Length: 246
Image 1 (cartoon, rainbow, N blue to C red):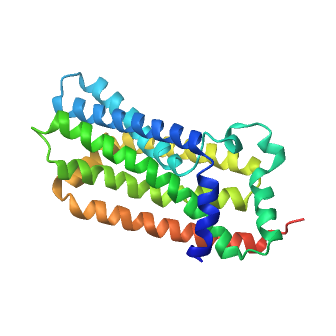
Image 2 (image 1 turned 120 degrees about the vertical axis):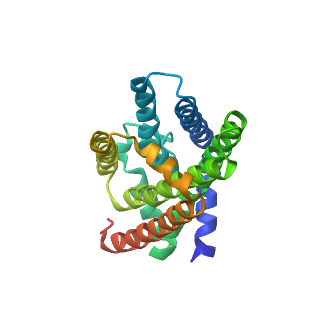
């Protein structure tokens, strides 16, 4: 299935170079904000309230924006208002079904398409975060901690980003936008609630975990990411089996 799905995914991916460039730019920005938050925490050269505020900004970007790098959120299908009525993803699905392409192949093609975008974007994120972080924090923090920190967030994003292809081929365009906005609201609300209850940003919780043991948090998070991708792929196959295409 993966061998048959790869040409479909690659054909679509190579036409999205502008959207990929925007994704990579977003990856750089998120990495720089995360490094800046870590620097301010390490230096402790600002008032506690200001440090906490900046860490909250980093929290929200890592929690809400990082998983979005698994989709070409800057592509025409997402940015155009016409997509609400044109149903670009369902049109593409009808085309594939017209050629009797098996549903598991269609589902994997979309997952591979997402993974290509995700791997490129997250490689940029991890590289920028570790390179810049090591340059400015080499005296206070081992590079293994920085790499583990970045990989923990990579695994988290991978576990959720499968939601994008699941919605693209498994729901109408209006539902895609509604669920995407709803997920952001839920994540932001959960982050603010946990920050209030724990009196500490999630950013710092992850930092404490990798300080104690940089290996296992990264491994567990990446395994969770793989499980999430497989679960969304299987869910997409089941969803496609129930869709009645005209």
